Image 1 (cartoon, one colour):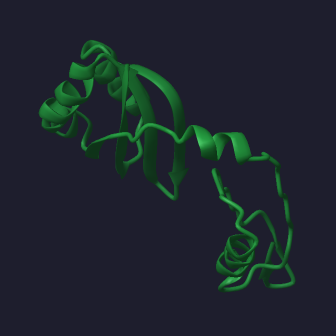
Image 2 (image 1 turned 180 degrees about the horizontal axis):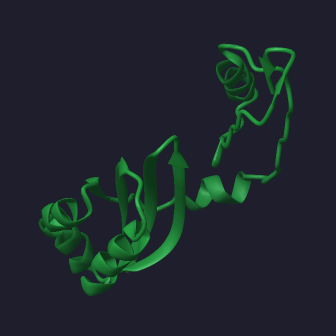
Length: 136
């Protein structure tokens, strides 16, 4: 079993997930993990695809077909095997914060976590409300 990372970005429209998942399935791949988001009309996809060793090569070879059909910009890379030592030492936790928005806040929090030797596996930010002219 090998793994590949497929990333794609482009203008959002109905049917993109169907087209991308069909492309992967037709080449023998299985989507194991995924992150997808619409950011102001741009759709971004990150997928971990598992399969036999030939799957990554098929995805890479045929990515132009997916780009032509979907209008997405696509990249396919072979994924490195995860370190067993790193996984054994990791202690997962969730950190949630709410604050008044300002430039640099993501950098400041990520820098603090880096100095504490914390590995960020997933990060999501959202401007959710505006109160008195300031975003939250």
